[in-house]
Image 1: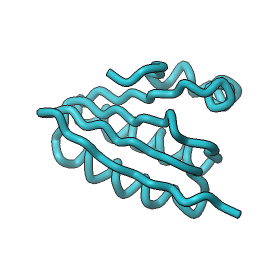
Image 2: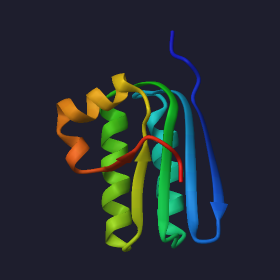
Image 3: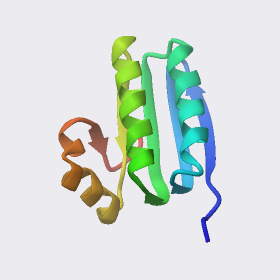
Image 4: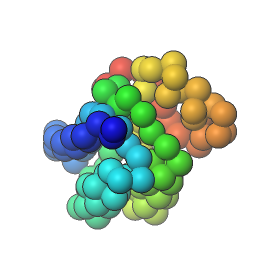
Length: 108
């Protein structure tokens, strides 16, 4: 059974923090994509995606994050992930995405 995902966004000036809770999979990835797309389009200078409450992510979630990173870079916005779970960090390491993303363990 898939755990419900909750996605919230908070602004602090031109910086946005998107907090995700639950599982990001093929069913919930579109909601995250829509949120990140809207945030990047609104001209923020910094986007932080807080994944500390994420219990699972699959390849569709990784694709959404890569797409958001690309979109932010096109607009000269900073994009970073907050990941404190060794299990999730391992996914980024195995895929080589740890060298693509700016990953930190604590939220700014």
